Image (cartoon, rainbow, N blue to C red; front, side):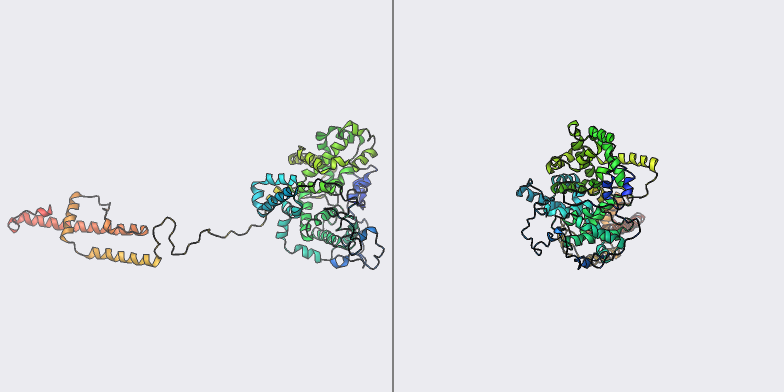
Length: 563
């Protein structure tokens, strides 16, 4: 893409230009190679000199030969020490008057901003609940813009970087203290001064911004040695460092490289080539005029979309627009990157009037490199992106079509990238965060001897219940051993004449057990005792009747009391 714009950053050099040029053979292929791998063709590079970055934080201080620093080296985060305290910084951290600084911006009213902060704090403090039940509300609030004070924290939650950090405690410190691979350290060191040189964090050689940027990029080469370092990762990491510490920025970078844009930074750049074809195919539906013009000019998508996609527009759009795009990107995934690219192409080349000045390949490429500020303005761009009807399902369907065409013409992909996850919800479902072990924690705590709600009186202790059960058993045993009284004999005779069913025990309210759990055994004991008593009394009554009939003189009066 040649010289990058928006932050005053010079174009990044490409050490693997032939790879991209093999796909886009036009003369402008050198620009697409700017995002290609800076991998030496002659093997590993020699270790860095003693005065340069050698893989540790302490070595970031300027060496003895750094006295002839360029003009930017004195305008960094250490500006006061360098005598440039009068330099004014805008709210984003860029030096006022530089290419990165912005003019008049639409300020959000303070009252509205405070309300949004309160809502976002509630969401972040109950993140799992909101993601599970109110994800659409989160998406809507990301489209409105995350409050600046909470943007870094929200990005960590949305990307899953916070979960990664919790799952890998101490991993970044381990990588940070490792020496690193010399072939990557030299390349990283040479790219540091190119990343947002007019931002207060990165303008000073050896300042905290460049120091943290070096640590994050070096840690990634150790975390994924098979991928190493790609120059397009540097602006991504720099944007993250503007909003969070180095360790959190590292895990967010890991999520972007592995979940949002997998394969973008691999050696062969196959994923970005596939997405270029997907973008061009979707353009036919969004803007047939722009699609026809690019087809007629035979302009390969890699010539204009490589830097857009690999840097997530961080080096293309005004900074306020960059932040709004990233808010939506972390929530909804790569479809936001596709939508932004389609909106820019549609409004840059989507009408015959605009194509009058783009008669050739060169003019068309220049038009896409110097986009109109109007179509990049924050409010206009965000509204267009939200309303553009391009879904992740369309992207995935087109991905399958382009992948099949790739396999028919070029064979199988050489780099096996993990599947792309579309946004925060898909990432959370694929990698749920650690959940604390649930412990029983009743909201109402009662002492052991306190009555339960709805019960009468205090429950009896277990020892007292056992004592009462023993007493009841003794009473039942004594009742069985005691001979029947005349009244009991009379009652038993009446009960025998009534002939109650033998398997149903008559009710005895005097001997009912107040404890429900012990009622069954005692009812059974009463049932057996009444059966034995009734049978004994019946036998005695029958014997008396036989004696009366045999000798009436023994009993002159009838035995009416036995009837």
